[in-house]
View 1 (cartoon, rainbow, N blue to C red):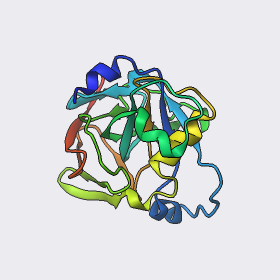
View 2: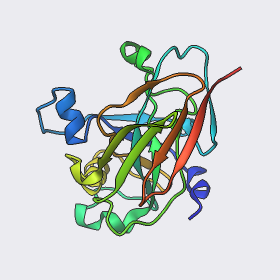
View 3: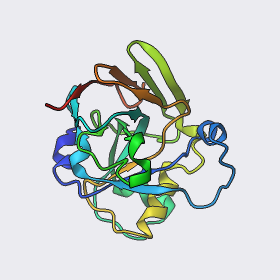
Length: 204
């Protein structure tokens, strides 16, 4: 499936704060009310295997996730109907500019959402995710362990904002996201979503 046709229409990327149960436990998060949500720009998306981050980024955290690509406009969609508006799924990395938490810029930079190819899934609630950095396994989990499932998230978000064709939902990262450096090679792996890798470069 050609993801680039959808990425040309992306208006917004909506990410979810700690959502894997192990990561929530690692951060000491016990409340189970509405999830923390944030927005990234379409310019953060890249399918390239070299990403170029601006020099003012002194540190950045890499986080493997399952992305959901919306296939048609939807508002107030019921959880049981979510599959009808989903174009496909992809493996992605939700990079965080961790030095900019206090200024609100931590998700704003270009090329901070590397994404793989789009695939169909029979069950998005049984997807393995791994992140390897320079050949070392850093993150590993399965979407069965999300507190808020992808279908629930899409239904929940659609009650706040209209979802449009090409919009992307990032469903959360496993425990142990890693602070990476210029020159690191990041590999995202999933038997269900496929693999994608990228090398972090500094923008000239």
